[in-house]
Amino acid sequence: MKIITRNGSDFRPAGGDFSTTTLIELSPDQGSKRIPSNVVLLIDSSSSMGGNKWSTVKQAAVELVESLKDEDRVGVVLFGSQAKEIFPLASLSQNRGTMIEALKKLESPSGVTNLEAGLQQAYGCFDARSSSDKVKRVNHIILLTDGFPTDKQGYRIEETGRYEDIVGKSEHITLTGVGIGSADDYDSNFISRLSEIGRGSYYHANDLTKFKEGLQAEIQKLDSSVVGNLTLKFSDIGSRFMRIAKISPEITVYDIPGNTKVFELSTGSMTKDMTSFIVQTNSQGNGSPGSEIHLFSISVEYDGKTTEVIPVKIKCTDKESDLSQVDPDVFRAVQVLQVHLNGEQIQASLQSGDKAKATRLIENTTKIASNLGQAKVTRALTQLAVDIKAGKSVSDDLATIKDEAKKTKLLMS
Image (cartoon, rainbow, N blue to C red):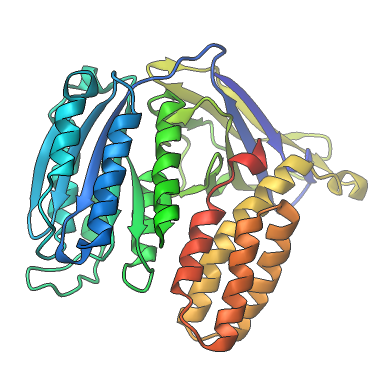
């Protein structure tokens, strides 16, 4: 594993507080081979999934099983009023045909949306495999749903902490959420949040084409995975961490601990493409121009291997000309993340009724996305502005922005 680190600037003022953005780029070992996957399909089988949605989901599940490799394992869990394991994690080399026939014959959906039981059953599929059996594999759940969690009477459950806890405690299992249909019908904030906690992707599948594109993207990601679980190891920390985010091949913002000298961050699987992170820290100057301040050290653990430890430092200066230098790649990475974060701020502003602030954010974000070449994000932002002015529902616009702003592979390669 090759690690390259770059600060947004090589210099900081000699005194006072100062924020630094560090870009961390990871490249897999030369000749790294694709590793197999353990994939559990967690499918919403509540009554709202009937009709075209159900036939589409069954077809997509069959295509996924057909597309994965013989050495991969697939499990299938349905959740309606109860959760039911249709297939345990089973090798496709021996069970592909049987699994496809079972998927084609799935009964029509019914009942309420007991997501809690579904998540517990899905994560339990991995518990059935031994620890040694799970290493050097991608361990992944794909959640397909068109709604939000409900109680036994079918009433929506507003408190989502119980679901986030289930997903968050399983550090070595990633989760991708696929929201099916209009974002007026399912909670895109909730599904995308679960995906963020699960260190996976999020797809807003409001039509058949986008649904198939999302599943195909997941297949491609699984097919190109070369590391089962990547863990960032931060040590000798001499600054305060403000934010850590994966920036490529897609965006994930991580929760970070408080003041500590060492911590680890599990980030999920890694494909053969370069994986990039940005780390934003705040440090205190020592008042001595020319001296160095140690921000932190970084190493990576992956599939039983550990890289060398790389120190990240910044020089103190009292020259304005030094402070004006900016690394263009780090600046671009920050802009990519800003588009993603602005999408959440736009939604929060609209929910609070502050349309003026939302409009300003939309204008600013549209300019950034356009400059970055994010055509789909730019179009979605433009449509959002039109729909706000017309007084129309903007749920699908916001979900599309959330979906498309996460995809950064081509921007950072």
